Image (cartoon, rainbow, N blue to C red; front, side, top):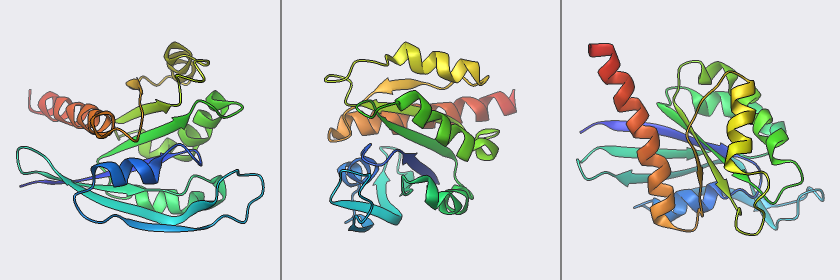
Length: 180
């Protein structure tokens, strides 16, 4: 049995805590507190980390660590990124400038993204179809990066599992490339 540490990050309200709770087989560890930041329209927010666990069909275990969304907690991003095998970035398409938000996480995890596979999940696209997934791809391409980008609903287990599977397929492809 292998264990995989996957980091889940993204904007405040993108659904990191919800996504982890949706797939976790254990009661997730959550460090939400009442929100005192009036610029964020949310009752509670993560200030430490979220943690959940998922066992794959092959017996491998995925340990999911969620970061706080606010950039003021970026020191935790670097700590939590240690020993991670991949990164899931969740974006909230209902925010005023989601492409600018994406840049915050690309910059904040720039060092880790040199070696880690990544997948971007974009939520709330039904009610907010702009920017499109193609717009996200163009934003990534402008930085010289290419990652899978998926429209997701983090309340749906299948969508969150698809993000995890997409990330794990990248890891598997990387490992096969090393042995050839």
